[in-house]
Length: 417
Image (cartoon, rainbow, N blue to C red; front, side, top):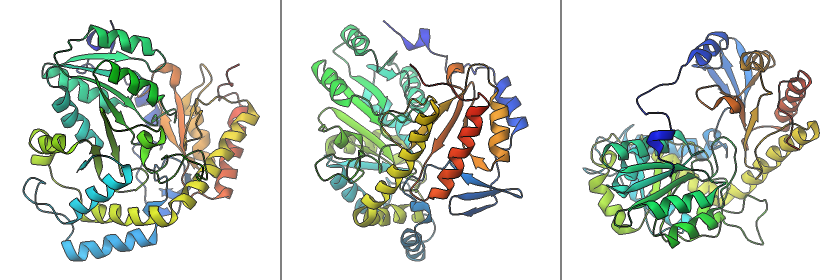
């Protein structure tokens, strides 16, 4: 039995940050103040860089139609609703939930400001005094929600997606008289990989557990598959449950609009009865400040753009991502990305200093997400590249040239045999 309290870092103990502190002192790529944006170029101080750290996968942050819709909504509603959702909801809220429910093919949806809000409130409400099983590679905010649930009386365990038998052993050992919730990422936030959702859903249904999936990086990018899909991403961007051909029976889907839709809002897809329960049990619905009006309007306008131009944008996104992955393959460089999603993790060669890599990237005008210890395990130190449909071929050419230079210096890990 793998009990999280025995095998995972204690939530109250922070690992040493000496390496991270040193890196922050040596590179402007942490806590950067961005002075200006021009497409997918950003200015930090007097230096312009190509931004490969953005998660605005569909380029909605730069879309003129979406920007205009937000401006019009602010003129109508003001900058910010003055109520918690319990007290008052601008008409924008129910319109979003209806359109989102239709897009996902879900029984119902509830929107709250952020995914972190959802993990810290909805997950404890679902598990109660039962047991929560967090996949080892899942986003830290899921583990934080599980830790909070543990503080309220739940049992917290971890398991690995590549060992489903371990999950079965843990489910078998848990008290069937209390809720059991199995948690994992959809598109993984570091590797970009998609889990074997059908197999995991089957295990959960067999053992009477609820499957809780955070698809922050998949919603808007991957979707339902069929003969008409233009890319391996599928169609409509309606997230991992539809992409894997699953139903929402005993499955809770969590996702956000802050990535592909470039707006501050998140959602949980649940049956209507559970939604009504969460309105009383989830503190962000009762007490938290709401999302800004511009974000709410941007989500609604994003639905329109997704319907009219979404497949075109995803085709561009896939093509640019495939170019980077093909180049890495030609260099024999390792990335765990197996599913061509626009999240490309690049672990460093053993012993190579991330500060040296960050310095070269900075001097070559390439901005990425640095993954330093203890933000990631020591064996995964490196950096992450995110592609968006707003990048250009010339920018990808430049990225590939810099990756070639890093490889020539021995910085990038070789592909696994």
